[in-house]
Image: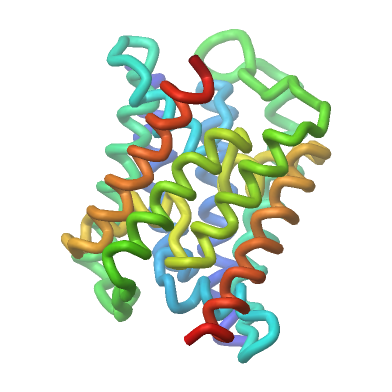
Length: 137
Length: 136
């Protein structure tokens, strides 16, 4: 019970956040799309994207200050693996038009067929990757 | 002005949700993806909670205008193409390698862990490669 309560509360907050975005300014909270588009060009049109990204950092900072126990983990991998992971995540989410937030949280809630397929695909390939990492190590 | 306030608050709440849920913790994510090992299914409840809220709220919200503006910017594409599947597969491999997806990557920057910076930097490179090599 205890193990699912935090994921559930966190998930509900993520839902409330994306509903705030949709109800407030009519936008979908897809983080890879927001980051990718804000890199494209610096413009006034992107202002809401910048403030969202700043919000992400602020929210993280607030948690780090007031609830540091949630950061009781380490990011462990060799630099080449981190670089390959980063490039694949960046390139893949742009090619596939979304990530865990855009497809997983928003698209599936809209019952979008593309998002269901995308989410199944990235979870499946994530699982296959973790499996092979286990076999090879 | 109020537009940026909405997205700022949305960003803050999203990050708090990512931290509380455990999505920022790569060990937790790898545990969720490790279906043939000691599978930790708890992160499935993140999606369940988020989709549960959005399923009802999105329905309600898309029936009326947003507070700012008069339209919703919703994806209109419905066809399943190879870009969608190939992109998602590549993303899945990257996600499985480190256990970090885009949102948690950005949030992890505040830990000032060099790995987080390297990851986000590489992710941005991947996005720019797509923009300049594939799209244009």
